Image (cartoon, rainbow, N blue to C red; front, side, top):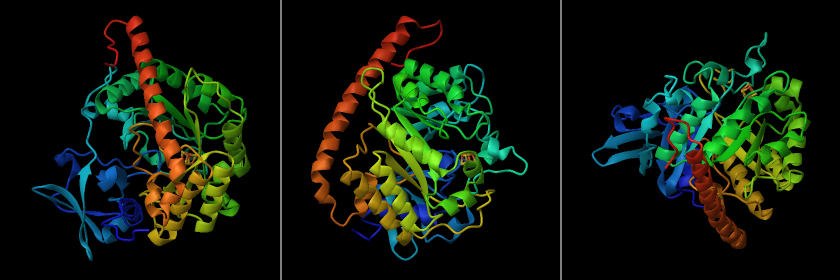
Amino acid sequence: METDVRKNPALLKLDLYCKGMRLGDECLPERNGGRRILRTRAGLGSGLELILPGGLWTNVPVVEAFALESPYVLRHGGDGFRIDHDALGPVARVRLSPQPEWYERKTSTGKPMSRIGTLQGTYLGIYPAKVCDYWLLTPKEQCAFCSVGLNLGADDADEKSVQEVVEVARAAQRESRITYIDFNTGHYDGDTYLDILEPYVRRVKEATGLLVGVQTPPHRDLTRYKHLRRIGVNRVSFCFELFNRERFRTVCPGKHREYGLDRYLAAIEYCAREVGPEGQGFEPWVVNGEIIAGLEPATDSIAAIDWITSVGAIPTVCVFRPLQGTLYKDVRPPRTEDLVPVFARLYEACMERGLPIGLAPNVHVSLVLLPEEARWLQNRPRRFWLGELKNAVARRVVATRLRRSRRRAIEKARNRRPVGLQPTP
Ligand code: SF4
């Protein structure tokens, strides 16, 4: 593996997650066409959205205390932005992820569009419902790393109607060329999260033909996931965060009490193995199990990756970030060297199992290091050449089919367009 961050952009992405970055005085992103630094997105991200060499999109911690001790600093000169390292000197030229023009516009109901949804990398993330119930209990039961309850009402609008979300999805599709929209909820008593999301999913799918994903707790009625697939959902994601049962109980007390780790695992296995090809025409279907590296021993994270891939699902591995205002704000972030084996295993396990990684066109994710990006952390990446070839072919097939379904959605929208509602060109 290339160990020089100047030559290995995935290692740089990981190192920046772990160490953060200082901002040079001249580097205010909004004055330079970049995205406003939001306090949080979906409870994990809080930083500066950047594009690293190799086209790797990332979200670099810049507001947390540990970032002030970072050896990395962002500089801006006549020829753009670069990251410098105190010991290594110039490390990489980078670009700020562009701030879309639609962020500043308003929906037909007068709300700023960026309070309905925000770009995370190159996809649109929407948290459509009220704050997770764990934040509303007395005493609170929120996950110790989570900042969702701090964020809602600050950077996000509280109520988001289906029509508002459709307007933002269309703007993002038209102007930011997104291909994927992700709906995310916390826990609501009575397992209502899928009932809440379904009208959004149906209307956004119908209006845009975009790939759609949902991230919620595991519903008690697993057959609901077959229904989700039928209405056009392409991805379901279950965040169990920690595979170590003791750590799961400590870090996620609400999830432990309400669901327990086994419910999460059962839902992942069911969705990966039992939800058959029931989509509308050709619709990709991906199941993710999401964990946070850095809050349990690396061996447990690797065991989680091996379990998730063994049932045919794809791991999403976040790096723990001690966000301001959270219960874990004073916990140290993980060390890069401890996480390299975790991410190396991520790519390796996906390829060993022949899992379809990196298939969705133009989906760059800033909050996690993707399995396909972790290829850079391999000692012998070429041994998976056949699997990579298969994924490259599948990528082209998915892109072609998606173009068709998008055209169909536009046609349909044209045929039943209400006055004043323009279809996405
Ligand atoms: S389930 Fe945990 S991580 Fe998710 S929103 Fe609620 S408190 Fe945050």
